[in-house]
Image 1 (cartoon, rainbow, N blue to C red):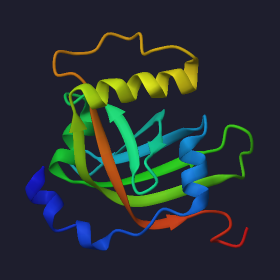
Image 2 (image 1 turned 90 degrees about the vertical axis):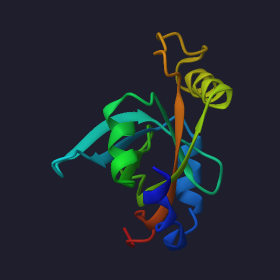
Image 3 (image 1 turned 30 degrees about the vertical axis):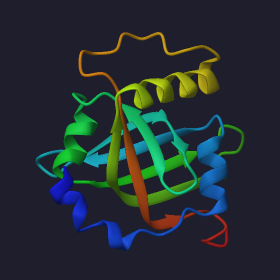
Image 4 (image 1 turned 120 degrees about the vertical axis):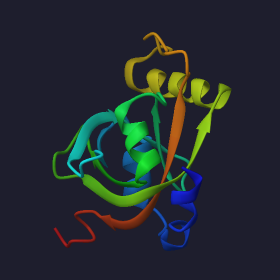
Length: 146
C-alpha cells in the first residue's frame, strides 16, 4: 500500500469542525471503496477521528481493506444519528494504517461508544487495522449553504 500512498499525501485538506463533531459522535458512516473492477463498494460502519484524519477500524482480510491497499481513494459519508439533515461527506484517500495492539484497543473504544461494551465479535487471525483517511474535499450542509 505504501507505493500508492506516497503520491497522494500532498493533496490533503484539513477536516472541518462539522466533520470532527460527527466523527466523534455516536454516528454511523458509509465508507465507499472501489472493487477491482471499479465498481463502488459501500458499507455502513463506525467512524472516528484524531482531529486530522478519519479513522476506520476493520480487519486486514476484509474486502474494504483489500480495496484500499490496491486503490486508496475513498468517500466517507457520516450521518448524524439525531438529524438526517446533519451530515458530512469526505472524499479522500487512505494515507496509512495502524495495526497491532493500537488497532485492537481502538475497536474496543469504538464498541464502548456505540454499544456500551468492549468489542465482543471474534477477531480474525490477522487482527484489526485502522485505516487513516485524509480529506481531499469536504462537503457539509453549511459548505453547500443548505
